[in-house]
Structure formats: structure tokens, C-alpha cells
Length: 110
Length: 362
Ligand SMILES: [Zn+2]
Image (cartoon, rainbow over all chains, first blue to last red; front, side, top):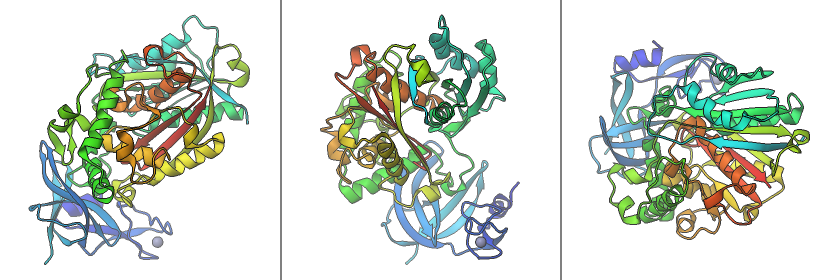
């Protein structure tokens, strides 16, 4: 199993960061997309801007979800509330893997 | 570079599901093309996201062919158009004179969901990214659910004239608007459906094209690949940069422009994608795609598009090109667009992370 998923399983959100130029590699890759050097997993900022959100009624995938930009890391997360606004600051409060699929839970920041 | 023509095409009936293997599905339209024809096949390219090993070569053997070149092309929903671009290149370069391009898919294809893409988290169905696009387009340009419904109504109406389409029954704006919400604002009838299906094309060199009646010429191809992940594709949620850049290249290569296009098949896996396609292809001004949906002048998706025909992903791009080739050669029978001379195909994969535009001429 890859390191990203292993970390997620322990509820840790870590992203590969370049050992040379420090760029983040997202989605996770052993190589930096800027300079092609090797990357190592590091904790990154999990606050970001909510770009867009909607509500899903797909079976077993229900709920409010949105795309968040965390300093260039764009990720779809779920929200417990629909009292959201585009452009608001949000934070990842939990992550993990359920039935083999990653999940990321966010909430708005005051 | 040598000119390349589409000499023949065939499409199977798209069905919810069948007992047929991917190989049987792939062979069916090919048999229609090669049976009783004295033509050597130099290349067999199979477009599919099905994971059977050595699948293109198995299809070639089942068809009794010994081509020079045989391999599979897998690029999600874009596979079929990518396969045609590859076959075009091989013929244009002189590597071969004829290529059979076949697209085939089963409804339960692994290609229906990109598991690798962890940027999508738990919301990893295509409808989830489609809803992000729809909401962004609505809030930025005022596009409405009713305008999206108009796309579905048009394509389902067209599909009712296509015996190979999965959906044979037209739907009304009211039916689309009152269908179940899948991911707000996308409703059930804004969505296409995965199914079993196959389609095939015979591409030939200019010299071989003389042996066929009304060959259709490939005039321009543009392809752009931005990423595989939604996280990277989502730089701009209200337009698809890959599609607009691919279109620009294709128009340039074909020495034509949007106003010259008479007929088009565009990627409408969700209604919002067809609205974005109008803008990305230059048929409508940026932000006016919704209005264009209610008043479009060009014949768009005459076979019923993906919404009406169903979406066997590896077959879709081939079936789109097959439709435009039939239209331009005057063989589209009851759905023939009168007097069409130039046609366009627009296809996408995975949230528009890659796009292909092909321009054909009679
Ligand atoms: Zn680097």
C-alpha cells in the first residue's frame, strides 16, 4: 500500500514535498512535477478556500461536498453543514479511508 | 503528410447490458465493415477501458486478420477519439494504408470511475465533478436548469430517430426538471448512462480511398492533455481549457472556423458539458452557452449524443466520428442533416482533463 493511503488510514493527511525545490506534489507522486526530484511525505496546511460546493444524493455518497484549494492542493471534501459560501475559509478536521476510498471532512472557519 | 479518409463505419445497437464479451462486442461492427470487401487491414486499434489482456490482437485474430499493427488504446471516455488520431497518424506517416479502429465497452467497465484520483475523496463519481461545473457555470453566467434540460430534450429527441441508441423515448423539459436530483443541480435526466456498445471505422490512405463511395476526409485534429486528476483539471470550473485549445488546433489544421461547421457531435455525458462545449468550440460566446442551448443553429448531436445513445466509454469517440462521417457522406437516412459539408467531433475524458477535437470534410 502506498504511503499516502497508509497515512490516511492513521487519519494523517500528508503530501509528498520535493526534497530539492520544496514544491508539493498533488495528487501524490514519488516525483516532483516541477523539477522531477524525489519527494518525501510531509504534513501540510489543511486550511483552504472553498471554491464550489453542492449536495450529493448518490447512494452511499450522500451529503454536502465541495472543492477546496489548500495552497494549490485542490481536493473534494465533505461538510456537515450546507451553510457555506464560495470563497470562505475552511479547514480539514478529519481524514481517513472507508471501504478503500479516501475521505476528507472539512468545516468552515470562523 | 498523406491525406487520410474514413471509408466505412458501423455501430452496434447500444444496450443496457448484454451477455456478450468485450471481444464479441468489438467484432460485430468490424464484420459489417470488412465482410465481402477485398481490402487488406494493416492496423487494428481497439479503444476500450476493459482490462482483458492482448485484447486488440484477440479481436484481430477473431476477425481472421493478420495486421501489421495491433494494440489497445485506453484513455477513459476520450479513448475512441485518441484511437482515431493514432490511426490517422500512422496512415499519414506512411506506416500503413488502412486501419480498423474499433471501440467497445461493457456497462460495468472499470473505466467508469477513476479510482487512482484521490483528489476526489469520497465524491468520486463523474456526477460529482459535473455538479461543480454546473454550479460554477450557473453562478458565473446565470445558466439555468431549464437550459440544461433543453440539451437533454434535444438529444433524446434525436436518439429516437437512431435505432442504435439506448434511449428510444423522447423526454420533455418538465420530465427532465422533475427527475430525481443526483448531485445538485444535476438531475437524473441531465446524466448519460453507461451501457454495452461498440462502433468501428475504416481509415484509409488517399490512394485506397478512391475505391470507396463518398469517403470523408479527416481535415484537422487537436488534442490536449492537462492532467489525470480532477484536482488539476479544476483550475477553472466554468470552462474547459483542454477543449478550447484542442479546438483552436483543429480549426487551424483544417483551415476552418466555428461558423463553417454544419454538424457536430459533442461530449454530453452531462447536459452542462454540452453547454460548455458550445462555448469552448466557439459556437457561442463565453457565458452564452445556456442561451445557445435553447436556440442553436447548428445540428448538434444528431445521433442523440451520449445522453441519448448511452455511454460505452471506449466506443463513444468512435461512434461520434462514425455519425459525422455518415452525415457528411449522406448516409444518415432519417436523421440526415441536409447539405452538410463540414463536421466536428468534440470528446473529453475525466472532467475534461483531456480533450480531442476532430474536423471532418465531405
Ligand atoms: Zn522539485
